[in-house]
Length: 454
View 1 (cartoon, rainbow, N blue to C red):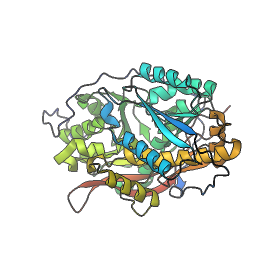
View 2: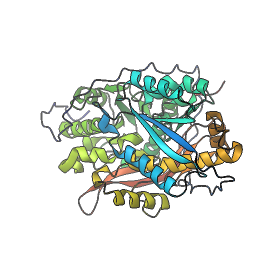
View 3: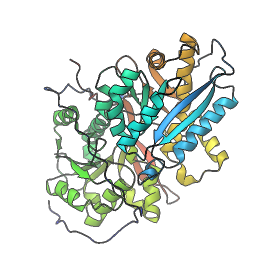
View 4: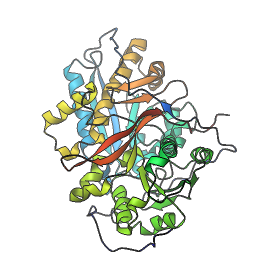
């Protein structure tokens, strides 16, 4: 490296005050004897508009509970914030006000897990004993999705998950865990494809033709989700070197200087962040403090490009300008899309602050409309009394691509358990001095890095 690394004591932003305990790491998924070949990215359409589904019968007087589990308290509660609670409840209220789902009124059951694995499992155990048994649950924790992946198959309860580690969704194949976004290894491979194809235009000044990627991720299953054997094989096929994963403590006061120095001294000219929220600001701030932010291309998994990063940086939000993120859904600025328009109208009518205008609200709000469509198909198939988790999954597979109000898509077509397309966006300065996420590559089909089937 031409530049000498110096440890700086300058703090460029204020981190959250409360500390948190690291989440125990999960054992990585066993490597395949031979990584399956990965398909390169191709142009793809934006999320589809919702299907027009007509109820064949009406079931007034019936109710159906949506079961959610997430961290509402504890040191990691700020990761999801309150937006996902409001988004879910607001969508339920609107659906019920419009007559429910084929006359069926929806209710919400939400339990606090603090994102602690043991509590995630305990809450699920409570849910599975309910009468009637849940058709589906929603979870927001990669470790939980992995821990529950076999249980939901046994119980025939669909887990609609935001924690999309490959192991959770595709081990076993044809499981009951369905991701709201592409699996992390697909996202990483898609980012590598973007960097490879655009290197001449985006590479830092003085960088050569060789691309060396350093990945820094949380010290748990989520943090290891990008660098699977299949994703690393895809990187190799592009001629890209990926350095050994550097782990980042899940702690708002963590110092990541050492991890980033290790990556930089080993030649990293790309830094990929498999982390969320305050951990993204730690990397961005430390790279600035070391004087290397403009010497590397910086990118992140989808959950790492969100409003909370800008909120934490506050007046220092311009420090984030320039970093890229995988983006498998529309954003608040896509106000010409009907689904985003509806979310905006509801969000504004409720009087939520602009700081809550994150993907948290937008995705959870939109997801409920997608779930309502699946329920409609399932009831058209078997009626209300015939509803089971197995029938819910069959309805998802029958639909193939499930549009969530046109804001994002889920995919359960055949053996698919996650969508496979995304944009690349970049944090850029706006004319008013704010920072927002701007499309630099429109939707493409991401490389397929799921484990090869036997």
